Each structure stands twice: as structure tokens, then as C-alpha cells.
Image (cartoon, rainbow, N blue to C red; front, side):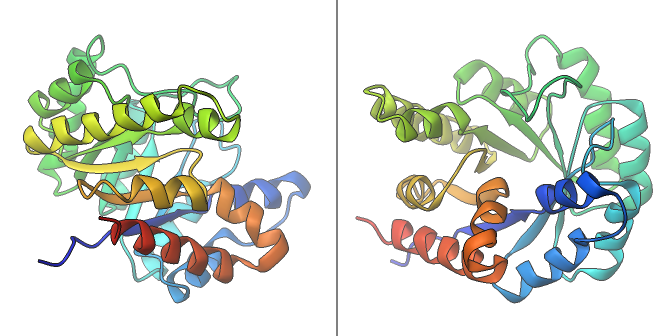
Length: 249
């Protein structure tokens, strides 16, 4: 029986970070999205932060209009972002925690304490035909709450595990097992399971061993690798690593 396919969503945020460091229009993150598609990306991810530190409103509009792949619109659970999502109508919205002072997303969304706030927002997005993803930790309570809230997808936060692998931490294997267990809990709850944050060739290949995951969303590593080997090649190598991992028995 063939293994289920695994998708790669390419996050273009940090192309916009480079652009914004000098101002102006270059490098163009939408051009990066087109290159990603040519290299085999299955979707494009972009996080419109409240402070617009990288992706801008016009980037989201152009991606939606010009790029022939699904847009995964990452955003905070705020009225402003809900209104923009309903206007843009991306394929999916991934609700993430957001603090203005953080360099990058530091952990999963607190869906348990925030359930009353999130429930009407999820309903509005789903009523508009937008798939809803919640970026959460690989723990039973938030996963089961995500299912009760009516989310379509959970994206499990892989950042802590990737840090453990990078630093050869003895806890890395336990972190991997926590993600695998979380994926199985989510699948049993009827959720589609994605993963993201900090993944590189090595960690993506290993996590792809778990066939419950159907999509990885990766950006920072691919943009960093692009400095040395080009964006298209970094994406092709990532897809190859994921496929190798998927074939693992």
C-alpha cells in the first residue's frame, strides 16, 4: 500500500524581512512565491503580523491573486486579521500566538484558556469557506480543544524539538515521540495534522517518518539556505528529504 503523500508549504516571510531591512520593493516576496511553486512547493505560507514587520497587506493580496497554489494565511486571532482574511479568502488561515516583542513565534496558541475568544472567530472563517488551522503544542488538552472548537487542522509546534536536535540534547528523542503521539491524538480526533517551526533537512526527514503528518510549513531555513544554493534548490532538497523520510519503514 503506498504511503500518503506529504506536502511542503513554503513560508516567504523572511524574503520580506530582507526587503524591509532597506525599504523599497526588493527582494519581492511574491517573486519568491512563484519560484517556490516552480521548485515544487505545494502551497505558500505568509504571516501578516500586526506590526507588518515582514509581510505587508499588499503582499497577501498579490499572492492570492497571482500564485497558483493554496495560500496559508498565518495571523493573530484579532478582529483586524479576521476582517482581512474574510476580504482575501485564502485557502486556509492558521491562527497563531503573537507578541510584538518576540523575534519569532515562541510557542503554541493557548486554545484551552482562549476557547471563548477563538470559537466565534473560527466559526466566521469556516462560514466563509476558509479552512482553519490552529498552531498549538503537541499536547492532548489543546489538541482535543482544537477539535471541539471545529478547527480543520492543527499545526504542531516543532521549534523546541528542533532546538533539542540542534544542540544534541538527550531530550530530543522524547521530543520527537511527543510530536508523533500528538499527531496520532489529532488524527484520532478527526483533525488534519501539519507541523512547522525550525525544521531543516534533517528534522523534516525524520518527522516525515510519521505518516500522520500531511504537511510541513517551512520558511526561515529555506530562505537561509537560498543564500548559498538558491531558493529553488533549497526547496527541491527539502522536498527530497521529506520524500526520503516518508518512505521510511
